[in-house]
Image 1 (cartoon, rainbow, N blue to C red):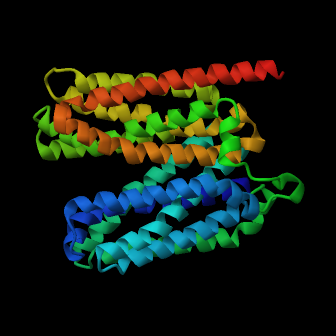
Image 2 (image 1 turned 90 degrees about the vertical axis):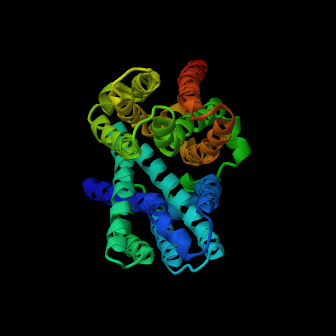
Length: 393
């Protein structure tokens, strides 16, 4: 039963990852057909992110009332409906409308499943959970590419993904009795309690440190994904096709690192996984910055940076029940997800504005600063948690 529920959770996270890279794959064709400027994709992603931030903050109330299993079923159903709606969109404003339920549903699913795995499974399963999100994000461009090369249109790519999500939602619906046996159903009245408000969450000692840690990490990840190719091309003079291929390897580095990290996470523990990951991130950034030839050093640096990034997010999430107590984990994880989405939304555009003045050469310094902040904040968090535990026995 445990293995079956885990398989369903991983399948749900694949479904969650599917639409995350779909817009980027479709947009070069899509924006012409709906009659909007190429740069307007940024507005769509900001609507997505705004919805995920809001629903992440509300996730504690939702999962306390519905349970993780039913929350995921409803979330996937709404997400599938939003993606189907996008497949029918004929204007930019229609896309904006469908982006609202898309973001709300994605944030709810993300927070519910992260909390469930953090509470019920060991570190390795959390690392693999996020690896399966990467599987979905890698698959969807191929789905869209198949639809476009067969002249079926970008609409068919979105339609296909929506049908996949409907199928996963149905499987999860059928499996709800299993979730209830494993603590994923509606919590008993005596365990349900009152949902913590944002103010109450922020009063918990250490939470004000973990939020900027997530912000710093996602600033590095999202900024690297958006600007790596531009840096390699305009600062290092690397051919566009080579730069694009190696920038994609950053993403593959994250996914493969999470799969591999799952085999050692329980042995080393969350804290040491974070420390080791940050050291590898610093190595990768150093390789990117080094003004040496051949260019393979800088290109390999992106892969190393991806491997370093891979286990930071799942390790911080998994340590939440240990750091703050299982009774607070659901609410805190929701707020953490909101902090993460805020970093990934705001920081890449900020670098773009900075680069207009300084040039794209500032890119590795930017991610170096946030990597350093990540290490500093997580170490301060560890000391705060240890001191709090010592004070209260």
